[in-house]
Image (cartoon, rainbow, N blue to C red; front, side, top):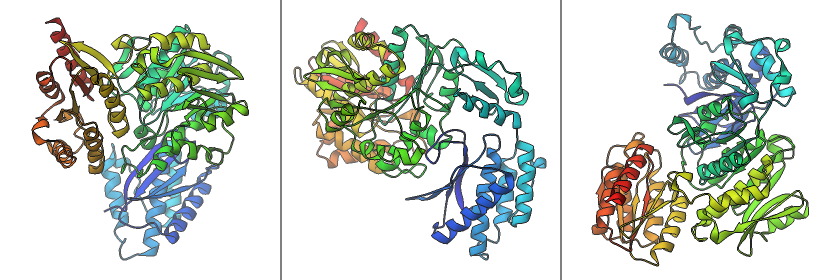
Length: 597
């Protein structure tokens, strides 16, 4: 058995550094100081041997082990994973030879199992001289000097680039050109003047990412830019779908940045993609972090809010000195971690802050220094940028706020306003977009989509963690106060800890609904047995005081909606968190059919 669980390439800025590299997660052994020192010194010697310069090694301890990350050039990332594994394994062998005597054989077996062509495998060795000689051979096989030369030239020109195993793209959108990695031109053979950037924003956070992306895309379209964007629903150019499914990772960002018709790009960037592979984009004029809340703990060494905030704040490394990093001042973790960004990235970052209160102390202080801010002042959205204050409309009249009850969407509007203005969109146009965005359910599919059928109020949403659910149920309770009973669906994906399931159940029970249909999220079992998640949630609801007869079970999301609809009567409100895009399409078709009847 190997003494690490996962070894992966980092193809962009990430939790550990703002460059490419490799990371492994230790397993079965505590990474005490002597072991870390042995790992560091071996990696340092290997990097010197290979001529890799720059960047610092990072060892990050967490509940399940230690992450060991090393920076490396973008063309030799497979070699970087091999160096990392060797340095860790050779250190373990040195400290406990009897226990780790079979490591070389285990490494060879793993290499043969993973290899597409086993005959080409150069057998791993732990003796240092032989290992360094092997790394030299591997690096010579993998190295692409034209690739690194073009990337360096693009960076020197402040030009974005996008890279994967097959293509290198220089520039972005309609100002880009793509080349097969195996057929790259020399630096001197390119018309660099024909390449350029386009206005680009990158959005991350625990909640509100997709809504913020769609708001920004709507503002960019209104400004006259054909706009490509990716989100959890797919990849789009304006209203044209280019791909369907969850594209909030690197693949979606690459497709957006390579879209030859795009004059602006809006990128949704989820936690998982940053941790697994790093950020696909190399530059963004604006980065927006909406918030950080408990979700996905226990994956890739992220066990707390501070660690999750550090993952999200990886996007800060993409922002140039004349750009803007937009942060939520109402989020105490982001507020605290922002003070560490200069040390993390080695430079001061241009900040913009938003909060629900225009007179939040951070906003007052930031405005006094000439910084960008947005907040609610006397019931109106207000923004200050470059010393100029703009009124963006009355909160209660903006469709996304549902009469002001959806505080989380007020926050989304504020963050999006700053980001849109930093892209170069004028405040009056932003206000006009905000005044109408959300009147049509297709403006923001799957997020706070409101219907009334047969006197029953319906909200189709994506709420998927405690904070998101709390925001949704606040709106639903606001609407049901004028009508009648409250019903909802409740389920979760299988890659959450049991504590996460209990947390969403407790949030739901706190709103004292009259019905909770506990559903199987059949598209997101992710290793759990069918029925396991619903059983945990239902038990937690009963323990929170919900009567068992008010908690029916459904084997899928569509069945759960049917059960809720059959229960509802005129005056009731149903909150319907639906997470699978296929299930949502089926639910919307069901609602259309009911409305027609």
